[in-house]
Image (tube, rainbow, N blue to C red; front, side, top):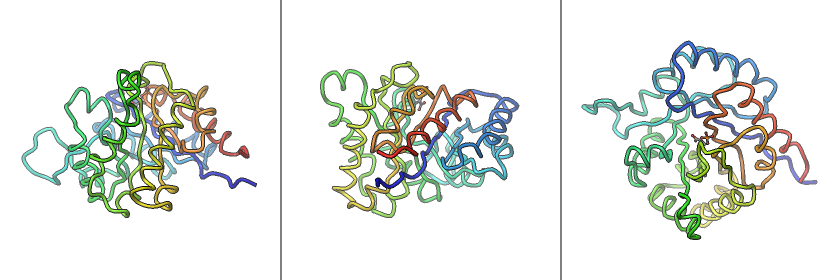
Length: 262
Ligand code: PEP
C-alpha cells in the first residue's frame, strides 16, 4: 500500500489587501474552519499593518502567521524596511521571499533573495522562497533553465540544515492573478525538477522532506488534480485566500487528494 502523504501546506498571501477590521474578521473565519482541515498546515500572510490583528484572531488556533517580505539587516537606518527579528517578535513563523511581484515591480534579484532568505533563517523564520518563469521563457522552452538559475543563485552557499528549513514555492509568473493555472503535468514537471536539484545538492533525505508549493490561480476546483501530483506538497494562494470558503475549500480538496491511495 502506498504510504499516505503528509497533509498539504496551504498559505494565503493577502498581498496589499484588507484593513485591520477586515483582516481580523477573515482570519477569525479561517481559524474557526481550520479544525475541518486539521491535517493541513494553514498559514496566513497578511500585509505588515495587519500582522498584529491577525495574530490576535488566530491565537489559540493551529493557524500559522507569515509576512510578505523582510530586509536582511536586523536593525538600522533603513527607512520603510522590516527585519526578521521584528517579524519574529510580531508572531511570524514564515516569511515570503522573492515573490514575483517583488522581483518584477521592486527590482528584487536572486542575490537579494539569497540575502533575505539567510536573514529569515537567522531570525528563526522559515522563508517561503518563490521561483518561476515568465511566459516568454516558457514559450522559448527555457523554464527549467530559469528555475535552475534561481535555485543556484537564490540558495548559493546554503548548508543542508539551512535548506531543510526553506519552503520553495513554484509560481509561474504567467499564472499569478491571471486565472490561468499551470496544468498538473506542467507543474509536476517543474516540482520534480526542483526536488531532483535538491537531491543533487543536499541528498535524498533533504530532497524528499522538502516542501514544494505550487502557486498561480489556485482555487478549490483545481487544487485536487494539482495535489494528486507526487511532488506538489501544497499551495501558495493569492486571490482565493481573500475568501474564507475558497481558501478552506482549497485545503479540503487537497486533503481529499491526500487521503486517496495513489
Ligand atoms: C500569489 O500571489 O502568490 C498567487 C499565487 O496569486 P494568485 O493565487 O492570485 O494567482
